[in-house]
Image 1 (cartoon, rainbow, N blue to C red):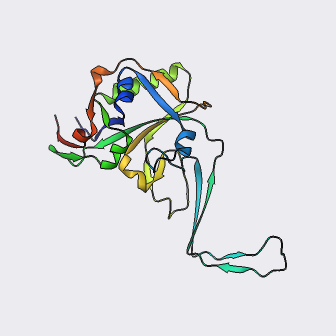
Image 2: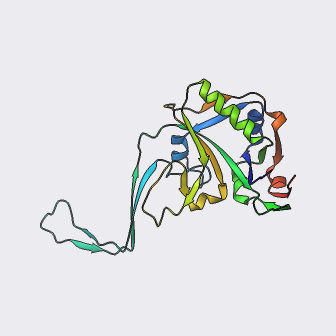
Image 3: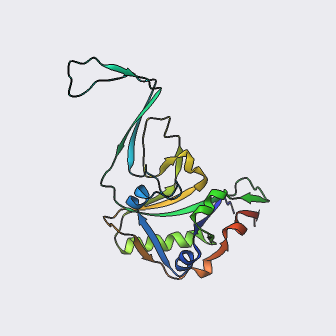
Length: 217
């Protein structure tokens, strides 16, 4: 069996217990855009879709109410123009991928301490495929469109890119995120009922989970 990663969900104990009972909580994209929490869950660039970066630009300004005034040059070595969607919509389900590619047969895996800011505990999915299948089945029953995949981390400060919802800035790379983007016009969180997943998941304290001994079967 070729294992490259397994997936987990960080959070507070009470929230993960609800998830284990089958309630999947999907916040809105707008929530993540507007959330100010020190750059953990919040990401002001979730609604950004176009980045244009200019190194050593020549910027000239003059007062708008004085058309005869001379332009003055601003000293700037970097400028970035960002286009944002003011009417962003949709919901997100985010998971963390634990990379085990460095453990060929067995070895110690260390989870970045920053992930502890999501909550005191972690829910480990023992059968990720079944979990995802249940989520996808529930979305299809509700006739909701969705897309899923790993997040690509790029240096938004130094590139001119057309950004998708599956790209984030390098500063978030410790999250190693897999996300499900759900197309909806909801202004509130989306709650999915996928049934009890106690048989395919375990909850641990983050401080005990952050350093693991991994062994391939």
